[in-house]
Image 1 (cartoon, rainbow, N blue to C red):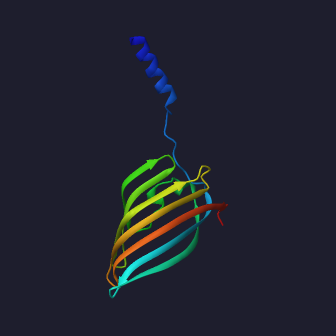
Image 2: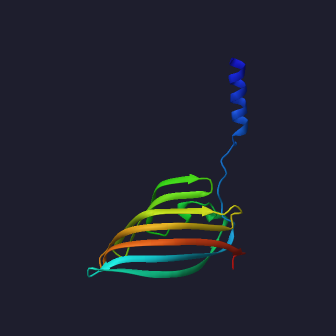
Image 3: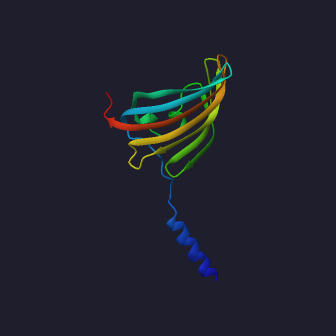
Length: 148
């Protein structure tokens, strides 16, 4: 019996990876696209305002290639409740900008080759100008070559 337990333990350890795979973006130029919709209530009238697509380009160096919220979120935002499952990271995000505080969730998946990302973001908050605001966004990114 003792031999059977030791054999099972040895097989389990052999099957487990020695080190978890670190998720990394491909270094180089990236094109990121965000399609966002902002819902608000102006003077008692609900409004939905599409804002996108917004496209930007960014050079990803070895220094910022690690796939984590610190390299994805903007300045003025903090991250809580970070989880990683497979090639997907999920987290709560809180941002404060231009007098508006936003809170919500973000989920981003890294493609199998490290050259693409897809994700979603849902934020709610209060704007001094319009009151309650809800922002939903679909996010995608793709590696486009060497940094320019």
